[in-house]
Image (cartoon, rainbow over all chains, first blue to last red; front, side):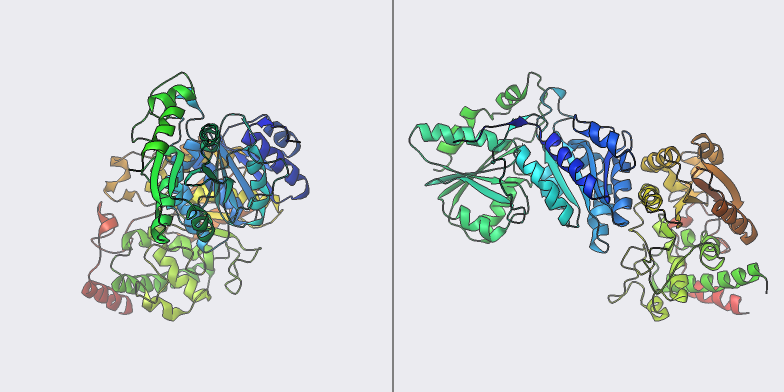
Length: 319
Length: 272
């Protein structure tokens, strides 16, 4: 019998798991840049000594997290993802990426509002650059889960891997893609959700949901296309190359600027390095900001990223 | 020999070593490294800091962050003298097999953090101070910050945080040498009244002559005994390029270098 899908935010899943871990691991601190979640109330109430609201101060959020991390604590630093990754970028570079090369630091940057999930808030709250800029930094693991199950599983991974990490979470409640009891292999960093014949989509984050719809649509027309979900942006290159190498055509889909160092760059580099004989296309945002209200679909329409647009790219890009 | 005579002697030696380092690595910020020598000497030889060169990261140590990395070169001879690394390393500064860059980082034994990108030290120290309290440790965290560095907004995020969280195990030393890269701070942003600013943020503040051992020692000793729920700011009024004619107080001293023959001459004068 098929498992019931549960619609849930990634942030509540991750915070509930951290809350559970805080009971048995007194080395965990949770810092927030005055940013909440329903699940966070329990952390604030039950662990007042290990929950710190640093105020609307993302730079200090990362600095304080670094200080705690240097002293051996496991830190979650929680904020809106565009501000966490960009306002505090140099703090991340100096105090996490650089510092951890000599002294271990387990700081986990937990950002909410990946892509255009804060749709109606406008371009200051959209985050289409983060995968690219975080991937540029050495020593930072960049994670982009597609559902609350993957987000939940990040917590065990983060506790056991003593290094800085950045995880970008979608702001909207979404149904699970992975089964409730699924084991997520963070070292491998990707999972093949559908096997296809000629064409394969490689997606990350929210776009894995859109990609699933596209796979189903192709399926209705009798064509099986593959779908690979990348949730660690430094995946096992050998394993991913082997998976992609099974196909003739690969298309990346990401909620980020395309041709700017994001998922598309990761896959292109892999194709190049491993000399894979596959054709490549990429779907993402063109290099301009979108000033549109009305929700995610309206933004997608404005950006030429409707499902119809995407299917057209997947169908016609190869000649 | 009284306590301060020993510190005077150490300071003369550090100054000589600093000049030799500058001769080997002219990229080093000599003026910035001259204003904070007495602060370093008081901390390390005056019985203020707890440290263990044999176990640089011992849990009991006081944490000291040299946030104004540019002025950290004068700490190199002190760390070598105390045994954090061999004194021979000082002669290799800037060479291919040396870990001594002109802006210090954690590759150098004895340095707690990455430094030199300004405005990070206080925030990191806040996290360390929270951690030390959580561990119920008696250790303290000290930060050396330049006055120009106070232009960085992130410093003031830390200033607010430290006071709100009552981090009385944190001592923030401002090397108030008045000059940043393009001139006097009073002609750039104007930080005065600096003590009033810290007081307004609910910090404990003392102001001293940053080249006077008795004043430095007295203030830092008072701070060690005052667990009054307030973070501590020590405003050390100093002279950029202290004691070197032409350099001291020059508005462009931050980027000025001393030529090798000038350094030789100064060293001869010191010997004489």
